[in-house]
Amino acid sequence: MAKRLIFLGPPGAGKGTQAQVLSENHQIPHISTGDILRAAVTNQTPLGKQAKDYMDRGELVPDALILSLIQDRLSYEDAGNGWILDGFPRNVNQAVFLEKLLSELNQSADCVLNLEVPDEVLVERLLTRKRKDDNESTIRRRLEVYHQDTVPVINFYQDKETLQTIDGNKSMEEVSESLSAAIA
Ligand code: ADP
Image (cartoon, rainbow, N blue to C red):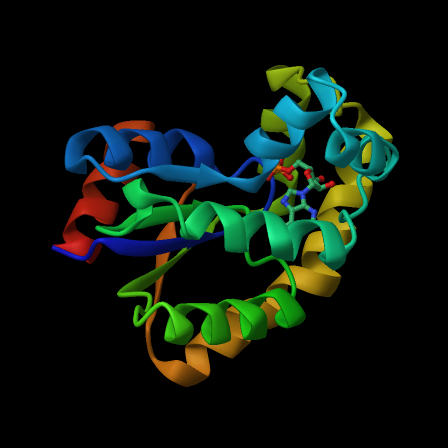
């Protein structure tokens, strides 16, 4: 089974939910940059203080903050045997950085999973989720940023042939099954 997984997909695609399930089933850490940043904001750490305004506006946090965060996290002992990245990489610069970091760690991603969901479904889902940054204008901005910055990451991995696209517009169970088959 693939143990180094990258989840791509728009906000609201269900990456976090599915990554959590796989993480528990396969005993590999779920590394969500969004969760790490939200915890930093709650704890008012220096990182949190710098990230907060960007997150509230639905913009990406500057790469300078994210890259050192992910470099630290992937060097923890629990990440030696596998990981699921959720929310990273989110632009091509982050993807290029990750390739270099992984080669330094003598690792590589086994599988890039792209969860596809139409925009109108995403807006509905996010509006009912009601996280603090889930108001309509932030949601629209996050989707714009996704199309502008993150869709090119899909093309980046498509060229390397490690990408599998999964229909995320199905029930949670059906998506879980497709994902399990994709990483088997
Ligand atoms: P969603 O999938 O709903 O967009 P996330 O939890 O993945 O939510 O991210 C929430 C916010 O955290 C993003 O809108 C962005 O501001 C910030 N963020 C998370 N990951 C990254 C990243 N890799 N690069 C830049 N900003 C990020």
